[in-house]
Image (cartoon, rainbow, N blue to C red; front, side):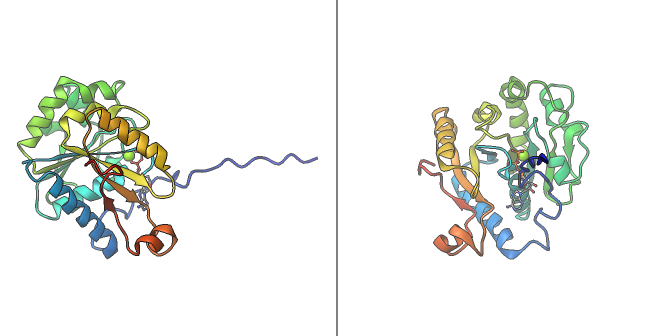
Length: 249
Ligand SMILES: Nc1ncnc2c1ncn2[C@@H]1O[C@H](COP(=O)(O)OP(=O)(O)OP(=O)(O)O)[C@@H](O)[C@H]1O
Ligand SMILES: [Mg+2]
């Protein structure tokens, strides 16, 4: 009898790529508008802050946090605001790949005191008002770096120089890095991948974060099929942003 080899289940997101997914002249109108709407809604949530710091997290991995962080940063830069995008995911960093940047030095080196701002900030990223600090080399202790003393002084320094800061973070349902930086962020945007992240887990992680004094500003439902499927039928139009499921934001 012939033994059939069992096929390994491959995740739909295993081929991670960001090519052609950053906002630009060719981006479909509905997607650009979604990010502009998200930007506007976020601005209302932090209208009293000179330089709001938005942390982007989720329940699980591959929800689209990094892509949304990058596009949200671009959307803010379209308003001629001085925008800084930080790759705060020092476990699975990707912003250097999104923007095709070197990553030999970055946030981890600055937080560890091995580099300065001038060494790590990248100002030529393809969008005039946007600067990027990539993750740097993967450190052994990302959580300690994010919760450490240096992180406070680094963020204070940056808030004097930018109008908006966006920090791409690891999934809060998997590691505690996102929560470790809670005292330094204005609030979090919680990304939910449509059809993949189950609502019980999302609720549990959001509640845990709220118990730890993390301010959830809103959720982004990512990967909604605009033309077909449940959301298209129920909502009739694409919605990228809504308030947090508990209505506590
Ligand atoms: N709305 C979308 N449409 C098409 N592709 C998407 C969308 N959102 C994310 N992707 C793709 O899904 C993959 C995972 O996205 P991304 O890296 O942004 O997720 P992540 O939540 O940051 O993952 P991780 O938890 O590993 O940091 C990437 O290839 C990205 O380009
Ligand atoms: Mg990511």
